[in-house]
Image (cartoon, rainbow, N blue to C red):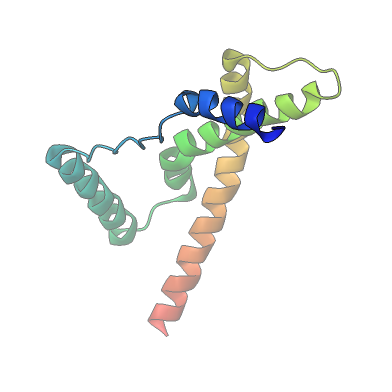
Length: 126
């Protein structure tokens, strides 16, 4: 007799069970987008290997990625500091600080890439 209320509650709750989650199917890129992406990749590789880019050219090409990564890191750092009572950086502040921090970081990374390219050229010539 004690299990009767439990069975009754279980039967009442069964229609309230959520349906299974249908994972959305990601849409493929268009053929045009894939073509232009492939063409841009090939052009970048050809330009870097044809004459060898300077550190400044590599830094200029990689700066949007460096600034974007720095902006994300600034925002996440502000979230961590919010646990200590600090303010959370707005989108504008995160992007602005990311642009400032991303410039020297990208230049140092480009210098490293240029050194690796020079080392590879030296090994190739020997």
